[in-house]
Amino acid sequence: MTQPRFLQIHSLHSYPAALLNRDDSGFAKRLPFGGASRTRVSSQCLKRHWRMAEDAKALANIPGATDAVRSRETVTRLIVGPLRDVDLATPEVLDAIEQEFQLAVYGDKGSSKKGRQPLLLGLPEVTYLRGEAERLARDDGGDAKAASAAAKAFCKDIKANMKAMRESAALPGGLAAALFGRMVTSDTEANIDAAIHVAHAFTVHGEESESDYFSVVDDLHRAEDDAGADHIGDVELASGLYYGYVVIDVPALISNLTGTRPEDWMAADTDRAMAGDVIDHLIHLIATVSPGAKKGSTAPYAYADVLMIEAGDRQPRTLANAFRAPVPPRIDAATRALGAHIEKLDTAYGTGEVRRFMSLENLALPGAAQGTLAEVAAWAADAVRSGKAA
Image: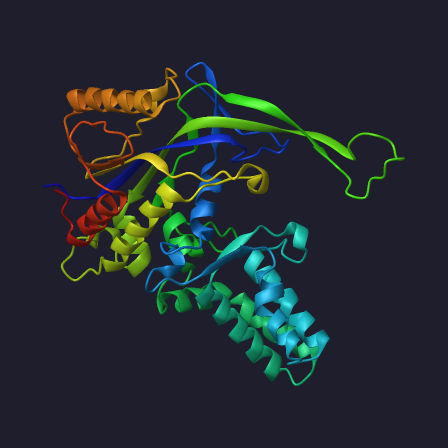
């Protein structure tokens, strides 16, 4: 029996002929590791796809979840925009209010779209700010100068106002911020530390890629026209078996979800039910949601071949070094390398984690009981709800 302070999720996903995550030049992202170049998928890409997934295990389907939006145009489109749509005030009044709100929300560079950083705001925060903008628009008497002064006065104290609002609302920054954190440069008290830490996934073997030549034929091409395709291009495609690693800081997760202090996560009156739901949904998303550029031409959809969860109360450690020396791009070889590395760690440091795993192959992992995805996800969720992993 151990206390599940941390959950570690290790996965192996295999993708053929795909471009899962591109760099600024349109090529597959890469990582040098162990003297070999590997294809990788960034943590930002993975989190984005898990956050935006739409299926039965979507984060939005968790009871009590609140939505969030990441944008540099939240004030324009979601706070002041709805007031323009109903002609609540003159354009001059709304322009004055919007200008002050842009600076308050996005900082001193917020007056221009280009100067703003895409900021994650929870729906409760957006609703509150829209209500305040509406109040200011109704109270100005049609005077743009008065509206600007009133908006400036409100925005001068916006940090204190937002703090009070957050303290009285559940998940004010939305579920996404509670899970993956956020940084607000204009209001450091609005920062939220990530409870879920995601590593860049990388291939357990050296990169396997090629340049795919393609052509486009003009449907209106006539026999007397020049022969050949209307367009010729190429794109990089890569195949690979990827190792993924995710850590869930359970006390931080419960704190972000409930407002409880992290050190009180095991208290008898702490509500851990939603944290259990989050873990169940997230494990399913990690196993079944695929990242991918060029979806229309590569159909890069795959489920995890192997997924192992560890619950324990000591500092997490990646198992990436199982693949520092590249292994053959096969599930059996990768699983054996994973198991061998776990045995080395257990021998050197002791067995401090309780494990469960799911695998498409009939292969064993040290100290880990095998089950279906639903079973291992339910086990992890129950461990957090009860505070005990066995």
